[in-house]
Every structure is written in structure tokens, then in C-alpha cells.
Amino acid sequence: MASPRAAKAPLAGSTAPAAGAGGVPPAQAAGMPVVSSESLLGLKRRARRINRALAEKYPYAHAELDFRNPFELLVATVLSAQTTDVTVNQVTPLLFARYPDPRAMAEADPAAIEEIIKATGFFRAKTRSLVALCTRLVDEYNGVVPGRLEDLVTLPGVGRKTANVVLGNAFGVPGITVDTHFGRLARRFGWTQSEDPVQIEYDVAELFEKRDWTMLSHRVVFHGRRVCHSRRPACGACPVANWCPSYGLGETDSAKAAKLLKYELAPGNEALLAQLQAETHRAAEIRMESQKRIQ
Image (cartoon, rainbow, N blue to C red; front, side, top):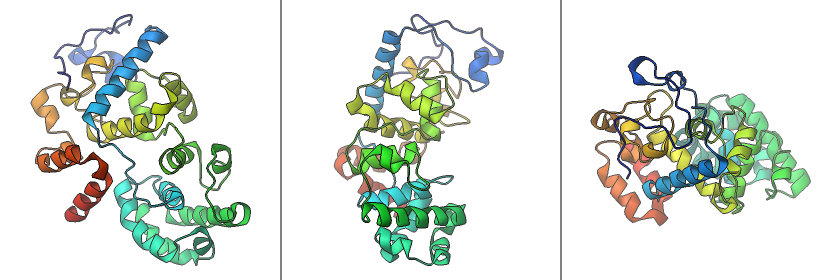
């Protein structure tokens, strides 16, 4: 793990903004990415170094939605909008037990689906999307989830983010998944200046080999949920602090930053972290078991 520096020097080739109150550049204080004159080659090298560091930190990174097939992942991803993966994982076992395939869900009583998925929020709109989605799958794809981006994005409730999640994790087709966490970190890392998910996807894709896209997405999202939080990033406990132009946006004191860490990195979860690191092939199963113990 890289040792975060108390005082951050500008990246090579970058233009450091003047510091504001507390020594933090104005852009950082406002939560905005730092604009840099870094060359494309330099940006690629730094971005790939960050990816390598995240791979070392999270060798157990994986899709945190539970699924057994493309259909289950597609439905779970639609349900994940505006809620947590933990909440989705709590409702999908019953949902899939009752409606195990597109035909069963297309023919379901919407009120029954609403009752099951109510905890995920926006349950009426999500139910309409799921019924329409499953109807299309039955009518146009013989009840089989298509494995092409251009087909997936035409389905009700499915955008590029959902399509890339399904392609990358259920079909092995590389894709960059731009959710809230990924977009936030991509801007903080200086990989993009955009707020638009599609533009962020294109900007980041230019920096990495295609084969790395899916795992990069998992690692960045893992990091965003555990360390690089939206309101108070744990900069002092960050494994990529030495390559991050937004270092200093959050807590830089290492002891205080450590208290901000979440999930398996949080203080008191050392046993869980050790198990995940030792059994990376069982990471999803271990996570599910730990969540059940908490409930």
C-alpha cells in the first residue's frame, strides 16, 4: 500500500491550483476534479498505476449483486437504481423463487411484484419496467437475455450502465460500468471532466486496455464505497493517494482516515478482510455470509 503524503506535490506536467482555506485547492474544496495539463501518455500511465494499486488492494473485487444467470443479474441491476446492492440482495431471493424466468415475471400480478421489491424504492416504476422488460424478452428473444449491447439498451429500464454490468459479468464481454461511485472517482482521478455517464465511459475507455474494463469497474466502485466517499473521503488511508490529484479533499490524518473506512476495511472487520484476501475465489459467497450474520 502506498504511503499517503502529508503534503501533496503536483503531478508531473500538472498545473496546481492556488490553495484556499486549509491549504486545499479551491477546486478540491468544492469537490470538483483538478484540471491538469498532464499529457495523454502521462495520464494513461498514472491511470494504469492506480488500477494496479486498486488490484492489489481489492484482489477480491466482484459484482456485489447476487445472481446465478444473466436474467437474474439483469433484473437485479434494474432494481439497484436509487438503492443499495445490499437491499436488492435481500429481496431478489424471494423474487426469483416466485418468478424464475422472464415468462413467469411477464405474467405475474404487478401488485405481487411490488410487494416483494417495495424496500428498493420506486417499486411501482420498477415493477412496470420489469414486466415490460420480461414481456419484450419473451416476445422478441424467446425468453433469453441477449448478449449484445445494442439489443440490451433497447429493453425497458435498461441503459448503458445496466447493459455493461450484464455483459461484463454474465457474458464475459468487457465493459465499463459508470455508476455514481465510478463517475465520482473518475473525475477525482482526473480521468475525465465530464458529468455525463456516456462521455465518462468513452474517456476512461481511452486510458485502459479493453480486457481490463470490467475488473477496473469493480475495483473503482469498491474503492468508492469503502475509501473515497462522496462527502468525506479517507485520503489518509487511501492506497492510491500518491497518484491522485484530488488528494486532500478528505481527511488526510491516517488515524482519523482509518475510522472512515467501510465494509471489510472498517476497524473491527480484520477477520473478514483476511478471509476475503485468502479466498478471493469465494469472495461473493463470503460477502453474502457476512451480510446474513449482520441482519
